[in-house]
Image (cartoon, rainbow over the protein chains, first blue to last red):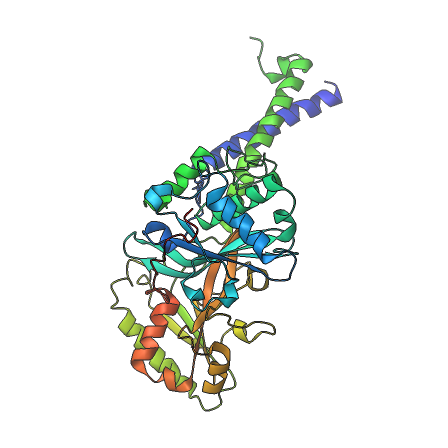
Length: 222
Length: 221
């Protein structure tokens, strides 16, 4: 037999063994955080209650005017597109209330559920979100959080209407319990599956995004 | 009888099969590699331990410029407080009952609220995921720092909140507090009711700040 044919035959056998091994691993390895889950499992206590999602904004480094950030956040959350935004989901369990002064100036700041910050560097060059004060919720049987924060990279708020709508909706999706794709290229019709993951950016949440947030609020999914 | 095998196939067909196998391996690798990475790494978990690398509630105790503190006595006070909290109705459903809690002297990190540039604003102790992010959360769920009372007054002012995020963990863009710093004075460590109440809030058995129903939307939107 010609030498390259021997190589071809060996490659076929090796590839077949590798493929069978991978199939077996996929079938018998327990899946953690199944890819079908859109939910991060991290959401606010107020999301389950009739308590409003009070929010404020804060510019950390003067990279954008306070009123500009406030206008864009408030507009995206409940003014610019009421038929497709997050506001009012689950019979108003998701309901945004703005406070107009900067967050650190509010004497009742600890009552505010969500803070939207802006910094030119963002979180190491990206916009990000995080949650604080975990507590067990006896009404739902799981842990949720009292406060959520978003830090925008300022340029994400100043690069045009589409981009600030997309960014604010994407980060608010995290606040409401949704997560990014599990890996690059895992794309779906979702404002959470963005160009950073090789997907097509959406300006507004999709129907499935809104449905998932509704289910989280109703404690129908973790 | 002539033996039939893969070698009997034309080389063009064998090459085509090989290409299909390689393509299939590539497709499966996209599913398998993230799955294996997820199986090996730390994740958020439901329940108040918060991450999968913790098998019990563990607290650490660290004096910060508080030389008069008897740490062994303080540790015993915390043990007693935890024994009381173990009767809390949320203790078991929150996943804290699987192993006995432990309190150890010495914490692996400095108090976040004492870092340069960090301060409590508007009565809210906020964190920063860029500064506080960890790849592997501490096995301690709560770092209890004992500070002199003047220092506590300087840090917290007149707020009653004594807890702040100490460590943050992220899965992708989803980040959250996974380790909490609790700041107490030597006197407060010896106040059983106060200590129990503050530990309950730091661990998450109770909300440190209750929900506020809020007001109607000011712009009518």
